[in-house]
Length: 270
Image: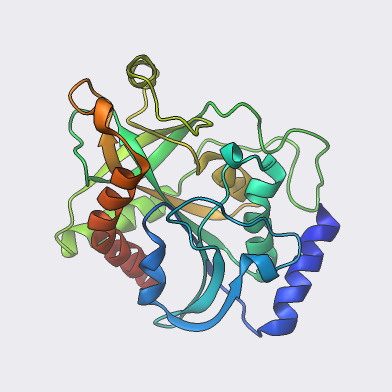
């Protein structure tokens, strides 16, 4: 994998003289964050060596390079999911590439189902921790020390300093934010009512099909990481019967202006 990452990084650097400080992974329905950027260069995934191509509705499939104020940013418009049939190596490959392009801080967004009764559809949740219940660990197999250590300290997967700064900025922007624990499952089916109950019993506040593998790999390479989730459905008997991907995208789209503003201000001020 080392050679593939370096080949991809070299390909990108040959096309753009740009060293991003921030990486941003844009989840379902949140792809228009790039409108906040002064875009300098866009690379479709299908033109990048070794990159998978996103197959999910709501994920555009491009690396976008640009600036927010004086901060250099690379954004993933669309991510890769384990349920699409990709290996964990492929799912997390872009995070490794970002690291070797120069990224030091990673912002990860997603859409998730809520089980915390204080949430509602459209709630914005800053992820404070996660529970990994995906069936394969992204670091399983022989470790390459050039990426990071064999055993990774996961006591702070999401930067407390970034969460504190985002909380402060949300108050200034009059955006209501919650904090919560995210549980990662494989998907692609939405959870059953019994599974939602399990998520709650295990101590999580929301559940989704992404983010956890990317954050584990980010921490493997010592990237400071911030996670934010939009609650697009509630895992209760009243609403579980109506969940569809179109509804998830619509709910994420409605909350998107708040998420865009908050991520933009965090990048500018942190």
